[in-house]
Length: 253
Image (cartoon, rainbow, N blue to C red; front, side, top):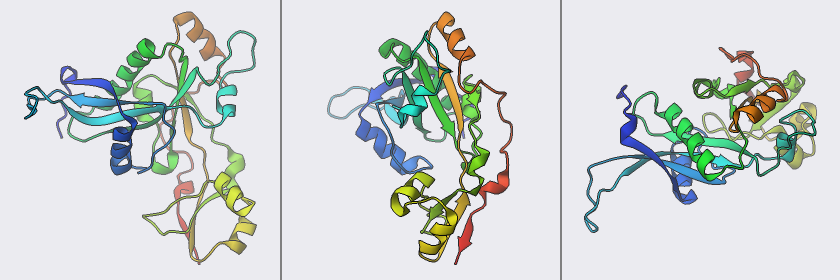
């Protein structure tokens, strides 16, 4: 892998959602598409000449995807109740996917995120805050968010200790059903009831909420107020996964 990253060889440009979706489904660790408002492609400047048009044809090597958060409670609960600043659906976006092919230097992901901030400030000035999540089950702490100065909010809830995510397909091809999906499909997320109706074998893992990060895009005065009123308040960055035993996958026969 090339450890040296030359930012002068790369740029971001808006691309069609279909192009981004193809990259994400093929290459992102989740292999799944999600909420999408717009997509930015990461382009590498090349010396390749298009045969027909006789012009340089740069190569798209990745993309970053932003979408509206799912569930209004996410936006409504982002800051403490107040009469000063209201965050609506038009003011908050979620960074939902980021993928860049290997071989372009270790700093290209953080550069891409930072460049997307500049694009948002220029093209979507109504956006005041961004959120994104790191999945501890995938052993993700959110290192990339820490490197780009996001604020960390731990929203892991110990009350979820007895809730599970369920898969009826075996590892490594598990298709996990979230507790909300289990309620929709089986009418409950109670494990005692689920155990009596699920086909054998099935696989379970303890449900744990993801780590949430927030980035504020506003001017300094408004940013200071928003940071002071985030709900919950920012915490020091995590340095290791808490309760790693929750990541264990259990087969039930």
